[in-house]
Image (cartoon, rainbow, N blue to C red):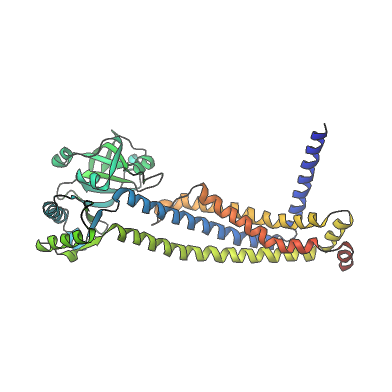
Length: 400
């Protein structure tokens, strides 16, 4: 019985305290809204920043999972890309003949539009052969990988990424139309190292298309990958590969040579650029919101001197008064944090596919900024709350 009475009293006390906090915030709705808006924008920017940094970090891990530290990427320049698939395939054959201890594969890719009945949107189409999956270290999640027979006969078979399967709802056995040709999905693939999680790029991998059937244009990319054996030095093998292509009809300057370190360096540079750009906006909004919140709490203390004096005269302790103002600051920052998190989540869901950055939105990405914002609200409300708690009843009533 006593426990039930105690619980009822606690609930009543919490309800009364919540009403007091709400009444305090309603006194200055304009200042409260301005402070909440600034903090909410900062919160949304911080969430976007963490999502972008998390996506780039996942991309770096995916690169390491797929390529490891022993794959040399040779990216064709504009002149070679415009020449169709044959020049790049011929140069890949030269490298394979010169370095029989290395796995060499070439590919040509571009984004293609999908029919509404195939789910709509765009997907990356990769033309290659059976060696591409081996060099990229892919594994078959369902079905099988492309094999030598698929490549030799130019079968209308397709291998899709796990991301494409999840986004488009495709699976083994489905027929999809790509640039006027119908392909049958024979497998769903993912990196063997587990680098592709819930995100990753949606792609479709098919055998080399007949000359003239393959699309072209500004969006076409061509790439040669060479997996170097562990006992070969990366630097010397790159130099030897350059000489091998220079001896043929393709000069080395028509390619861009990328080691795994170069690829990861590009990811790190992008992370730094995103961190400075989005982080500056987030910091500015949080500082503005924090300053406005602190000014709001100071103004509330000054304008509620009579209320403070009356509460103290009726038996409220200094800690009770301080807690009231502290809770008001935390309530403003908490509501703004939740609103900012909701805006960020909606923006990522709406624009995520159109953004040029990989994004990762998980519980940690959402909850970390919320926790930091609550701590910020408590810290900025502490001194006004402390000042309110130290006001004597007689002093407060006399000032009023």
